[in-house]
Length: 245
Image (cartoon, rainbow, N blue to C red; front, side, top):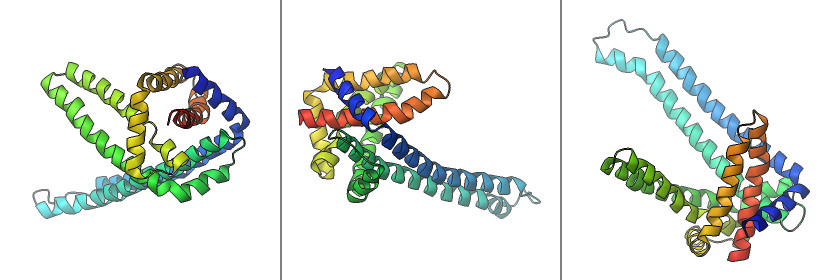
């Protein structure tokens, strides 16, 4: 059954390969430029800080003054990193829109921007909420079990964390296919995956194994993962959602 979703995704991808490559490339360039600006600001502030001389190291104010450029740079850099993450999720929502459209035939890069404008904010809020849930799960499972059972507990916690996060795999398809609300799409994803857990796990495991194998191919492996596997995962999840909702 897993291969049905993979086959359907491959058929849809083949018909729209160039559109997906261009859309993924645009997403990578836009978010990459924002990240690079943040890194540049951070490195620049570190350079300024390192050039500051402590003529009177015993004075607290002198030390604080020397650290101010670094602290300011770190703060601004963090803002840019957050913006990059939000832009990525915004465009990712549009990419799921392309995935849904590709299952009906041809899709275009314009679809990414159109869908992102309509449902991108909802995608961002959903991702933030899922991120908060993930954070608390990490604290309880990975950190908590790590403290209770050093090393072994962290490994067990990580495995449990990944298995639980699979339940949120269909949040974006819910937003795209049925225009569900933030809470509703999380609940729907949870319910659909819960009923079809092993199938969902098998689908994601398949793509995970393929990615692990391909990534060993220098440069080409990363390109295949970024511009072929990633779009196919989106298409598969949208198709999975439509078939099992």
